[in-house]
Amino acid sequence: MDKESNLYTFTFAILMVLIVGTALALTSELLQPKKKQNAADKKMIDILSAIGVNVSRSEAESMFNKYITDQTVINNDGQIVDGTAFDIDVLFQHRDKTLTDEEKKYPFFTAMKDNQKYIIVPMAGNGLWGPVWGFVALEDDYETIHGAAFDHKAETPGLGAEINTDFFELPFKGKKIRNNDGEFVSIEVKKGGAEEGNMSQVDGITGGTITSDGVSDMLYNTLKIYNNYFSSVTIQNDSTTITSYNNIKENEILF
Image 1 (cartoon, one colour):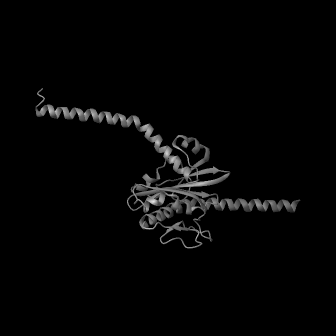
Image 2 (cartoon, rainbow, N blue to C red; image 1 turned 90 degrees about the horizontal axis):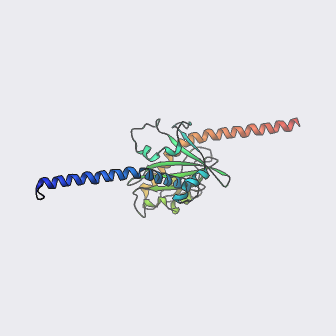
Image 3 (tube, one colour; image 1 turned 60 degrees about the horizontal axis):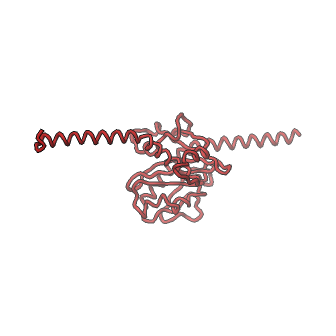
């Protein structure tokens, strides 16, 4: 074949495309298990960070198994349903506009640290330039925040991107998602700063109003679903406490 001909040039180009394309496809396929493991490790690291446990990728799985004692999935009504919490991608679910509220599943993780129980809730929402997401850990009263970890894809550096810094995350500790009357209020990222003494507000990010509002919406829209479940658990715990107290008083009378 004449190497100077157009036929040779086109044939050579097609062969190279086929060879390189095949090689890339095979490489991508071979790396799939590694990519999945890296994604799983990153997720474990993010979950544990909500309770203040910072680990490396190499120890992510062992530490996850050490601290996470249970995984639960609920539906939109707060009822427990079948499913594996870790396998649910809340960010993908948030983006999938074909899913109805009734079809969505809401995972959470139960953790034990220093003999204290925590509930870790994943969430996803919208920032200024792209999605934002995070994990919030609640204490065993199901209303007090123990810790929070947030992240983003493309928020503005120095502004909305600050949501994944200690400056933004640490003030969430000790805040409450219910008011003094036990009503759900979520946590508001307050523009201009949280009101003094308000246990359900944190400071917004100066210059990052849209991102701050996005985090507020994400918290409200997510936590209101979980609160349906938390409320039922709280009522059950209160009933158990009352029953135990009555049994003790009865025994005091008998003896």
